[in-house]
Image (cartoon, rainbow, N blue to C red; front, side):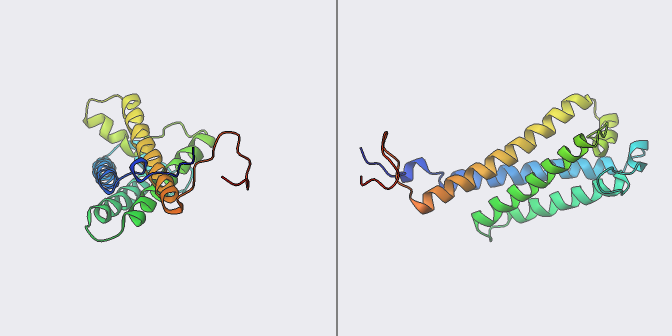
Length: 170
């Protein structure tokens, strides 16, 4: 049976739009939380970030500002879905690599930006960390998944038959 990747199996424009909207909302919420937390007086905000050597407060303002800008761009009606999905993938990859770098360097607290927020909102740092990891996973898996499926749809790759060798006629 010779099948090609059908249009029904590809993500629709609505699915992509809903994912982009959800990413914009998540980035806005996390950005406002990070910026709000960076205005606090927690001692951890004065320590140097092990990756950038900047004070954690400045890193929080930079990350929060970047997330706010990305959120605003994602909510614009202009701009193609591909550009928006690539922006989400780039930002999520950057955040992932930053977390991996901190873990690699044995940085004790991954949530320095949100340490002050933990003092003001009765949420344990552990729950906060898990929520942030879930957001990161959503952004990474959603953006890369949609980019890959979109790429497969453009190339219209035929599905291989079981036992068929590469280059063998169909």
